[in-house]
Image 1 (cartoon, helix red, strand yellow):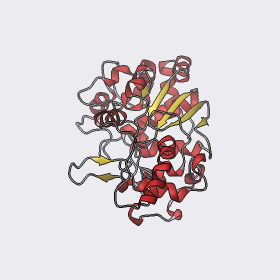
Image 2 (tube, helix red, strand yellow):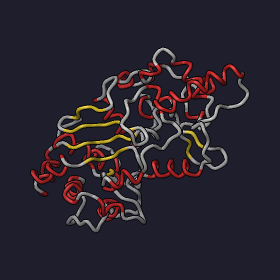
Image 3 (cartoon, rainbow, N blue to C red):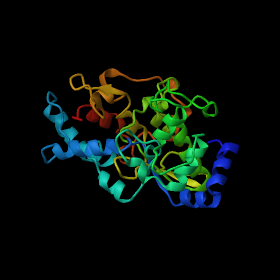
Image 4 (cartoon, rainbow, N blue to C red):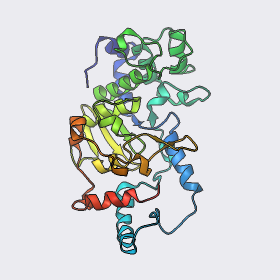
Length: 319
């Protein structure tokens, strides 16, 4: 993580450096979710709509009775360690705790999420971004961006207008960088909610990189094997998996490796067989991956010694 430069310090001094430092130190930001916490909300809705059964997951038919029995013996461990089927902590819990989301600082058309920003942090980002005019809590980051650049383009699009100082980043990537830089410099906590991230885009050297992927690529450099949290200069990073603090492992990442789409509904899939790295014989060359891949253990502690067995069971389970 780069240190604050002159533009960032000027923005910090403009809003009050001591007050800004205090605001960051007392804040908790959640990354890895959509602008309204939508990934968590959608998971909650899917879970609530399912009929309740004794098992959280079912094994595909067509396997032998012995294999099915073995699978069922392993399923509770998978459910506990990887939590693929349980939305865990409710989205309302995140909101009730008044946690901040990076997306509040850009905003979305048609919602008022931006009104939940911490004012002094929002003001700092406004000036650090080079937005014109005085800051106002009544104006979203999105509106300030579009007004500054006289555009209707969304700031997350690759071909949207950019400030020369952003070094090619989109507006949303730059806002995210300023939030991380504030936590890194002044303190605070950053929760990375990792369940619905597509990890080939995080770990493969040559890959499409979304805003969340870019965030993960930088944050994961601070983790070490067996850790659920890491020191982030003056701040802390915590890895969450479906609303629960979790020690991340390579197996977690492999269960949602590639972006895939439902052939009928065209909706994005997560943790389906199609998403998994080894499904259908797909794999990858370790040489394709960044060094950060080795910052994580292969599997949760409870699965050590039976990695392939667990992976084969996961591939036969319904999403």
